[in-house]
Length: 79
Image (cartoon, rainbow, N blue to C red):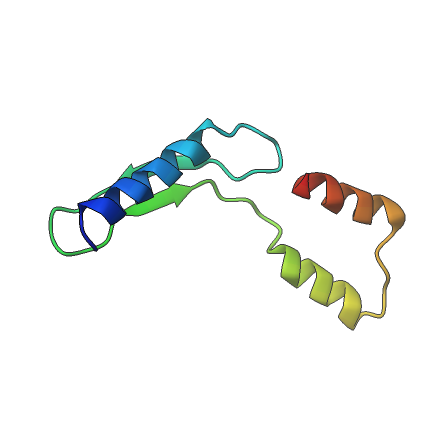
């Protein structure tokens, strides 16, 4: 996995993500670097319910529009 520069950048991003504590942000639980040639990885918390894309696609496929409170809730997650 790249050179020391890329590994340092990876850990900087992970550290920044670990410092974010917000109910609409998935938490980073663990990171690990394998001494072999495998890339580093991180483990993030599991959130049930599928992805935002799947939720929007399902609503669209059923012909249902999102209610104003649903749109508001999604918008708050992005702020």
